[in-house]
Amino acid sequence: MKRQILRRRISTISFFLFPATFVYFSPYVIVDASAKGIICGSFFMFILLFIGALFFGRAFCSWACGLGAAQEILSPLKKNFAIKGRIIKWLIWIPWITTIIILAIRHEGYHEINPIYRTNHGFSLGSIYTAIAYMCVLFVLLIAQFMVGKRSYCRHICWIAPFMILGRKLQNLLKTPSLKLVKTDSPCINCKKCTKNCLMGLDVENMINTNKMENTECILCGTCADVCNKECIKLKFQ
Image (cartoon, rainbow, N blue to C red; front, side):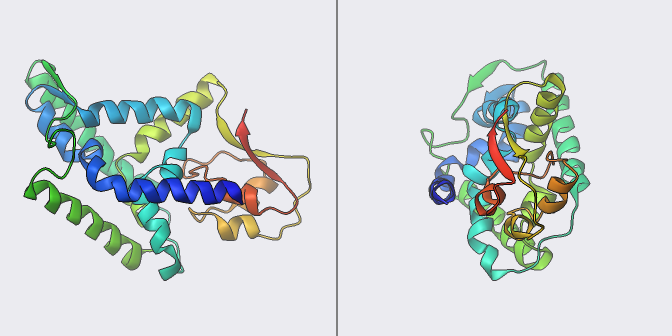
């Protein structure tokens, strides 16, 4: 379980650093910047997440996302996972991306690069308005976690996930080496430990038995591989 200890420590650090990095993941800042023809920090961040998904899938969600860490910290307080709702995040993402593209076209493209746009010398909480926006995001996360279920923010709201999902789909199309869950030759004894410990509430046991290890909601935390006594699953580059 050393891998999980390391993962939790890294993700917890990312949570405490989130006030400093918040703007670089903001869905609003990139819209505001596009309306002024500015390429901002979140523009670069979203591109990096897409490119990173070609090699690491959605591992960012479990290893380095501050909001993912917040949900994991709160998970013992809520037993049930949120209902599946993959399409909901797309209903948020598609109009948002469309708005960004339309604004950029209306202003004849981008004319300026400013990675620290809307920050205070690169630090996110540079104004009272940014602080309020940050607290609102945390409030929405809390409401989703306790009213809808565990990982509801990841399942239904997250505007970052589609970038990585699309990157992963491109990787599968190109068949390039990447971080994956791999079924081994060891027989599964159906103990369900993998499913019970999955951070996203996936039916990992069924994934093993059907040999369909790819799932767009899998965040490649490796928990299922680490709790499997029979080593039926491995997390590795393949």
